[in-house]
Amino acid sequence: MPRRTPPRVVPVTVVPPVEAVEFVDLAPDDARTFNAGVPFVTGPNPAARRFVLRDAAEDAARATDCLATAVLYEAGNDPAGQKAVAQVVLNRARHPAFPKTICGVVFEGQERRTGCQFSFTCDGALTRWTPPPALWTKARAVAEAALKGAVYRPVGYATHYHTDWVVPYWQSSLDKIAAVHSHLFFRWSGWWGTPPAFARNVDLHEPVIEKLAAFSEAHRTGEVLAEVAAAAAEAAVLTETMAASDVAAPILSGQPDELRVALPAGVSPDTYPQLAAKACATRERCKYLGWADAKALPKTAALDAPQLATMAFSYLRDRPAGLERTLWNCTLYPKTRPGGCMRRQPLPAASPTPTPLRTPSSALKPLEGVRRQTPASIARPFPAIGTDRTLQKPMTSG
Image 1 (cartoon, rainbow, N blue to C red):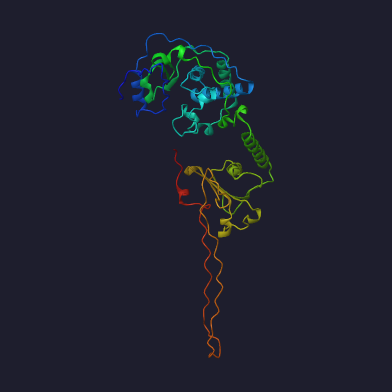
Image 2 (image 1 turned 45 degrees about the vertical axis):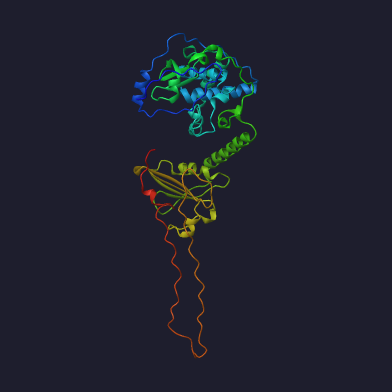
């Protein structure tokens, strides 16, 4: 267990440092025990002053979406927790130790893999999960209310918080002032935690956060708009392709549950897994093999080396064995894909041109019984779908 140390009081003439978020190495239960032993400070816990954003419409929309993202990714669907997170963000925006905009506060340190102030901005959470419309609407309502003067009184002038199952190193330098469900809230000790310290005016120009472009129109500009439009166009083409019954219709080979297909033109290779999932439907076992060149689609049951070498994509499903695998032909698609690369299949070597035998000038007739060398044997096709032995391993979590 770490030892509790008295809070550190930073002089009025020195702006307190904002420490990186690093945690003491404790198991969750031990962290809860430690946190329970840290007392709340005594004395007043005044509510923060009302915060009214006076940005122009475009900047206000960006601030609203940044704040909505923070309350949703930090507090989930917990109304009280969302209001508490919103209040902390507004408190930081008014404090000279933090950035001067709402988006700047929320995404402080986003360029680092670690050390960001709100972990969802740098741990990949924004790419793993997109908020459903209903939750996003509720989060924006909480953000709009906070930016129009709503105050969440229980957390006062808190500028920091953490869940009760972790212990960040910065905790010992701050005063513990409130708890909202499983979250504990803190403010700086001394003058920097009092109302007069929160007197700074925020900047009226909010930055564009490209990470929010997927679900925030306010953060789509220039190249971001072009990328979003391209993604939408590609999705439309894929939807149309998948809806058409006569396009990319799979051919059942001689083997059970093996589908061979000429992949449709005009769609990104990243969408091939969706085509495979639609074709395989509810099959427990399914092998989906695709060729980008329709002329290369095999017409025979057995696959030879040239056919395997020109295969563009493969998908293997074996639910009883817990196996699912997607592979791309990385010779055709060098970009790293979310699955992996097929094992490169060599094309058969061309038969060598026989070297003519030199006949001695003294010979009256050609030599007999000379055996010609047979051509090199064609490379044996691999057994499954153009991948390595890891296909035989069951899927594991993590």
